[in-house]
Length: 187
Image 1 (cartoon, one colour):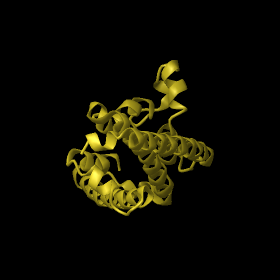
Image 2 (cartoon, one colour):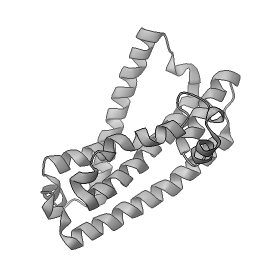
Image 3 (cartoon, helix red, strand yellow):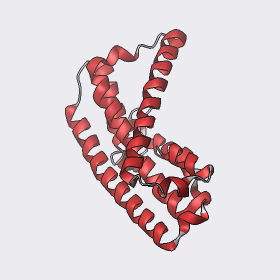
C-alpha cells in the first residue's frame, strides 16, 4: 500500500489523484485491493518456488495459515499508513522508509529465531510487535501441532491499536499537508 502511494508520489500524480472526486477512503480501498491482489499472486508464486527449490510445504500449517496471513497483512497495513503519513508530511526525505520500515522491525519479529534467544532489551521490544506473536505461533504449530490462540489475540489487539494510531497519524498529516499546501509541492 505504501509503495503504491509512493508510485503516485514519484510519478508526480498525487495532486491529480487527490483532486478527482474520489475520496481518500475510496483511494485507500482501491490501493488495498491492488495490494491484496499482489499479495495473493506473489504468495502463490513464492509457495510454488519454496516447494520446487526446498520442498517446503506452506500448507503444512493447514487452516492455521489463514489467521497468520491475515495478521501479518494487517501489520503491513498499519506500517503502510505510517509510512504514507510520514511521506505526505516530509516528502522525498523519508521515502526510503517505505522499503526499510519492515526491515527495522524484522529483528524484533522473531522471523528466523525464537524471541527467547534475543537479548532481554530486544525481547521487551519484541512483545510490542504483532508479527513476533505470529512467528512464535507458527513455531508452536510446527513443533506441537497446536495454535496459541492467546498469542493471536494479543497480536490482533496490538494490530488494532497500531492501525488506529497509524490511520489517525495519516489523517492528521494529510489534513496538515492540505492546509499548508505541501501536496502541491510534490506534484
